[in-house]
Image (cartoon, rainbow, N blue to C red):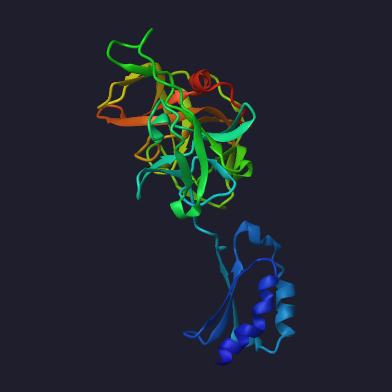
Length: 319
């Protein structure tokens, strides 16, 4: 009881910079103040803290000062994020109460309408405007937007006989409220990897900034992506304009790019981008829609280049 009383008396010290936690440690019979040992804790004034302790009625020998790491919220690309950046989880009803899971590609303004780019196969019917409703993170968090553009597939011209073709697996959804999304931002997890990167955002506001649109991909270039399943991954471009059949369907995506890098179910829609040096600035390259594992090359993901997306959706303002 005395420890608890001392802890209550010391609570105002939590307002000082660099204080991480206050605890009544019954095992050691002391009150413990956790102090931020990281670089961000340099604002901690130890002399001021000692003076403040002397002004209390708590015996100084009853207080332990211990260095520790700061405590942050555990936020990921699957969490509820507002305003919503690219690279985070979205849901859509496929057979209520069942939901499909994809990744929000990137926010954009299309003809003055603020929304986000997604895969056509992350809609109710690909190649048709069916007014699909989208949710972010969890259904109970509420809907965020509705599909309004999903160009039809074509069968003539360069499309192979008996196939249906497009040059991008893309659609456009309008935000229910324009302020739900923010142009020019992609979620930035803590680290990238060739096959399985981080999903964690630390701090929860960590973002890549879209500095513009990237050029068409070239073989050997390094591209990155952020998705809700495998997080931040990167790899080299191995094909720049491949015509790709979608297994189990009669659909063909013309002139797509292939990257030797990790992807998984739910990553569909992931923004693909170039990094600008080692900064947090990026240039948008397209959105991921498929992948495979090649015994010789390893994990491969396929994406629709941004030029192809704008050919079908029209000009997009991305930042």
